[in-house]
Amino acid sequence: MNSSLDPSANGQTSKECEICHAADWKYTCPRCLIHTCSVPCVKKHKLDTQCSGERDKTAYVPLKSYNESTMMNDYTYLEDVSRQSDNLTRARRELTSKNMKLKLRQLHKQANYLGIKYFSLPVGMTRNTKNQSNYNQKSRQIYWTIEVNFYRNNEKNHYLEHGFPGNRPFHDFFHNMLFSETPRGKDSFSIMRHELKYFIDAGLEQFRVALKKEKAPRGEFVDVTGILDMSFLDTLRGETVVEYPTFYVWLKDDPQPSEILSLEEKRVLIRPLKRSHEEVDHEKEQDEKRLKMDNEESKVDELEELNEENKVNELEEEEEEESRVDELYELEEESKQDDIEEESNDVKEKEDTSE
Image (cartoon, rainbow, N blue to C red; front, side, top):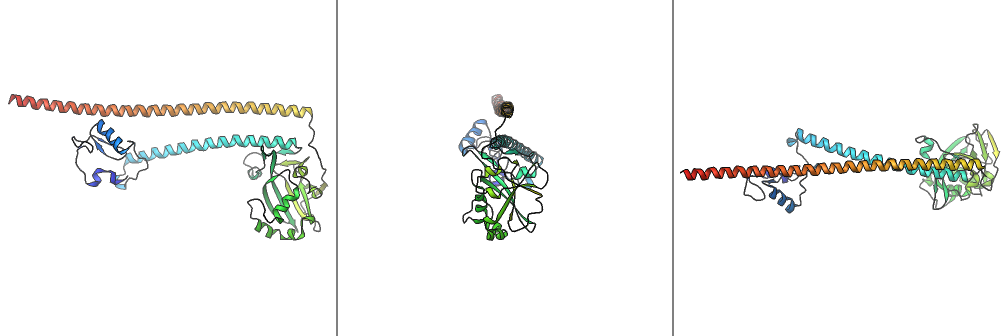
């Protein structure tokens, strides 16, 4: 606590009111420790110094002045801060969770519409945590996270790239990553290119690229080398993707990676896969269910917000009531003091009269 605000620290041991200097003080301001004698003096002090009259919960307190009351005040303050922090964190998580669910639903819907069998893993799993694939409503396209593994003599260099637009030719991905003078992205391309100098020297024309098949027997891949000049969506169309696609890259003159046990040619699907009426009806039904659940969640959130507002209002009313009680108490104390002074004056008058 700031000692300059404490009258006793400045050598002021007088018991007189520090505002009117006409009577002994009765009250001490919780914030600045000014001594006052009455409610008018308290109000004048607050008006003159713009003091709130509330205790400064973070004010410095010397160790010699630290007592059990101070400790309880600190404990209460820390509990309040912790509670507010928990409430904000919980609200932020709920909002983030809702946004993530909505974005994931849009990504699923758009990917499936484009003929890509898209699946996501439970929240918290490694692949789910790393995935940043998303559907952008403004540009109306999917921006993909892509896993790519470069193989040479069965030694693997693994990279994870984010934000590649689905409407771009797939060879643009490798051009940006390895050959562009002004690459887009936040990765350390100089380190990456140093590690992949062997592939850069060979050139993109010597690449062989295979897509790992998901939800298929181990070691099954699709050769997409011949369609690198087509859009990335054409590469994925008709395939299964779990969170994000995984590609293996090696040079044509090098042996095939040992992890590839089966390599089939890519069948290009120019148009999105047509869905049956049953699939369309099922999707509509699922959308209606999700919308209903979202509405119910929204109602629950509104009720929780109203409850929180009511609690806040109740607390404010309690604080106002406590403030009124304190003022009444001060007025009562002042009235008692005035009565005592009047009685004392009456006694003196009687004594003077009798004399």
